[in-house]
Image 1 (cartoon, rainbow over the protein chains, first blue to last red):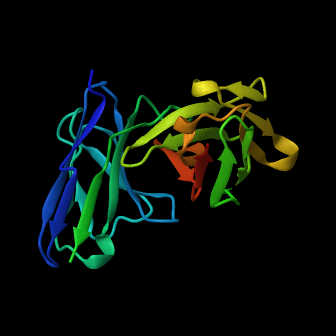
Image 2: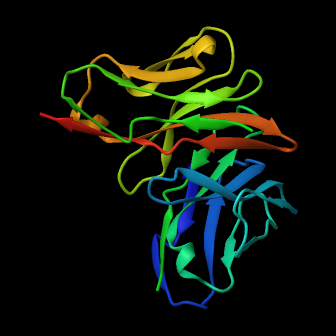
Image 3: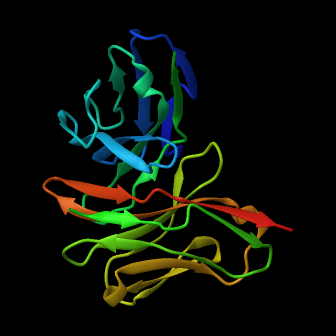
Length: 113
Length: 115
């Protein structure tokens, strides 16, 4: 049982490039989330999903897109990378809404130059 | 709207000393409250959570937290800190928002443990 896995661990992008951050969970959780973490700012929700085929925007969705074709996978897409997207990205999953525990992946560190 | 305040950005304690990390929240109803820990280069791990019932909650690694409704606080405590507790700690408040769980995180408190 690997929990939540994320790839890559680290990536450098040039401005305007695109990439996909991968996230997979093996806990059969319906709810999945993408956060970004900036120094001194806590975590901000980018997108979330309540099940396969259902996604919605969080607090800071601009510049990102997601899809959820299976229960296990929830990739995050950056179409035109900008320096403001330099951050650490965390994927999380939970068994339900409300007070359910969110389980986090190890994160992807992204640097946009 | 819900919010969380962690007033201490950085705390230094000696190994073996007691620890208290402060957390204040704002939410209209009874919230779900969480403490997460993040070791360097790692994701967040849940230490403990409060939904209802006993206001003193026990967590992993010897941590506990007390929910005080009158003070809108959920402070994290540990009687004797170990060097391995050095990490960043995040308080969070959660609530069901439509079809998902809206969790608002505090800005974190970085704990340094000195010998």
